[in-house]
Every structure is written in C-alpha cells, then in structure tokens.
Image 1 (cartoon, helix red, strand yellow):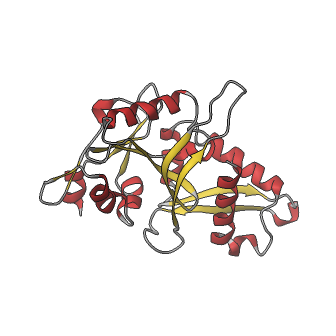
Image 2 (image 1 turned 90 degrees about the vertical axis):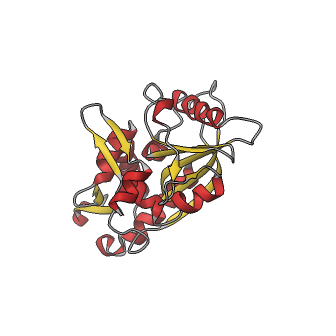
Image 3 (image 1 turned 30 degrees about the vertical axis):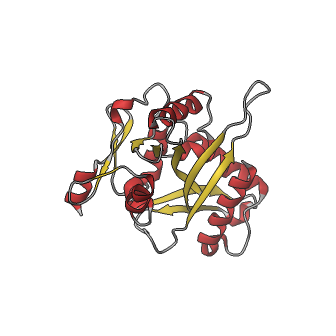
Length: 238
C-alpha cells in the first residue's frame, strides 16, 4: 500500500510542478492528502462525485506545511485529458492489500488499471474451470472485508472473466453489488465480445477505459450509486 501511495505522490508532484513552485510535497502534507482521499473514498458513489470534478478537473485542496506558501489546489486528474495532456496510465498485477488487523487475511488483486496513480478499474480473473461468477463473488468478499479503501476506494468499475466469458459492472459497496447489473460488451455491429483479450482491446485500452470511467459514468443521486453506460449507448453517443 505504501508503494501505491508513493506512486500517487509522484504523479501529483509531476502534474502540479507549477503550483508547487519546486517545493516537494512533505510527509505532513501527504498525510493531509491521504486523509482527504480517504474522506472522499468511503463509497464508490462518493468517490465518483469527487472524481466528476469541476468542469472535469478533479482537485485536492492542500494547506501547505509552510504557512507562508498558502493553500493550493493539486490537480489529481483532468477527465478531459483522455489519452493525452497530464493523464498517465499504468497496469499493476498481484497487488497485496495491507491487513486491517491481526485476524485479517492477505488478499491479492489480480489486475488493476491506474489513471494518474489512482486505481480506477479492478479486474478479477478465473481459469476456464470456473465460471466468471466466481470472480464476481470474490470481489464481493473483498468488499465485505473492507479491502476497497484508501486509494482502492476510488475504484469505479469491476471486470470479471474466466477467459471465455467477460462482464463489467459499476463499483459499489458489498451490500449493493448485484449480479443482475453485470453487463457484457458488444461491438459496433452488435456482436458479443466475451473473450477476455478481445474485451481488453475493445474496452480496457486507452482511450476506451478512461472514457468509460470518466465520460460514460453517470451518477444516480437518488439511489447513491454509479451507473456505467451499456455498450449500445456508448456506440450511439460516439
């Protein structure tokens, strides 16, 4: 987890060199940034509200440790900078979550896609001896155990696959993750895309992945949940 935060800090410093005026983010300031993220990542819905930003620009307010430097806004991500600008994309695998207590178990997340150092899409994989629903149930279990917290509380989309069958679903809390909201993908000709590698090329490549969790994510404010558009809606918009 510490490495994930260090990576996020590196992205923040790189993208905000102008407002930082050459003064690196201190340990005290990073603690304040962590607290801000944790407050805004209590649920995927609350994270999505913050990640919507103002005119697409998502900021972290920071009062500098040296009071003479004043208060600044650090740009975390610009949802308009898709596949360019100040957006960076990384893929990590086998992330090991920190234990919350002595009884807690280590959990390894299969594959995670990061935008500007922030986990946005979580992928759980099973081999073809298992159904994709086993991967879905695993995500629910991780959520019940409180594994999606801190930076991982920012995850906006889950993908589950056993190689042959692949589905996606908007991130939510364990009690609201419902298999009926799992969605398959179809291409522009309305042909189902189930193979995980073809799905990765069509949905998880850039710019497609960033568009899905940025541009094609809708907030259901009445039910306090995220909606990800279905493929036919996305194709119609494009």
